[in-house]
Length: 461
Image (cartoon, rainbow, N blue to C red):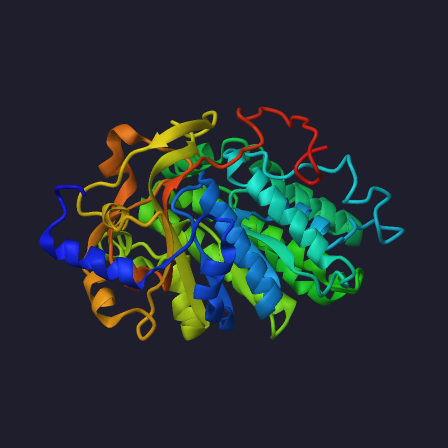
């Protein structure tokens, strides 16, 4: 046992070992889905990952999601990923054919080779990995024989797809209104030149008095909204209009986001997470009053920010906080953690993926505490009235918690990857994997151009 653990922590360790639900491995899903079964009664379920490169986090999240779809009627999976990329997957899993101006469907079926492969932007391994691919194939099988309007959909909530979303708006308008498509080309033309280096766009706007193109992108969105009824009538299901509108909103919010980056981290972070929650709300509305959504995102996004130093000290909000405020008790969250093992991550932004060793949890961290329990994997319901009262009270003591994104810097572990948190206020449930392995990524390098692999569509040829 680590010498840094106090006698009080010894007592907490004993409480944890008594009240958690152990399971052998991520494949032992019956054990942890049973713990979280009544989480399926909510409308929005947030499931996190403590890193963007850990196999167990992705696999357990997929197993929980399958269970919730099958037993509790969830029909939306929304990820911390870009809308245009996720829509390629959505067409595949719901068997939505691409549209054609004359025929109504494309001559190229989205389920066959030759379509555009999604998630090729850095970090490719975050969604282009075998754990996600296996879930996508399961989802397509699950939707087989179901009308595409009723199938479980796959959606992206993020706003990094500036170029992709501008192109998608133009392509959509080419189908429904060729004159307006030319207007979109004109309005987006100047901004398109910055799309490869959007950070430079933001810097230019802040440092030189450059006004940017906010007016143009807002006008484009406004024109789309004005013609909602007209455009929706072209393709009767409304999915195509919904995609076009969402891409126009991504462009508008991304333009603001890249300018906000230079005013302070909290402002850009807050804009991004607000965009993701607003997008989720529009998806829920589009799918109907009985729709239910599962959100896949990092722990730092889905755990309530008010229970961490990111919210208390840095004035940052996140998906978890905003969903709790918007949906109340109809929103629940499940976080996860690990002590050591390996992780897929880069050393710098835009770098190649590496398999890196995860350092043991630091003293006075939840990671150190969970490891000391001596149970390899376990699940814990943290909700008041569901968690042992004494255990929950003890867990309410503020501790360090680790967050690994797509970049991992073990040499600056404390500064780069830890924040203070109060676990039962941050999450409603928790999954622990003491030793984990890197996610099974499809590419080992960040491609400058699309690469070809012998994979199942939509992750490759």
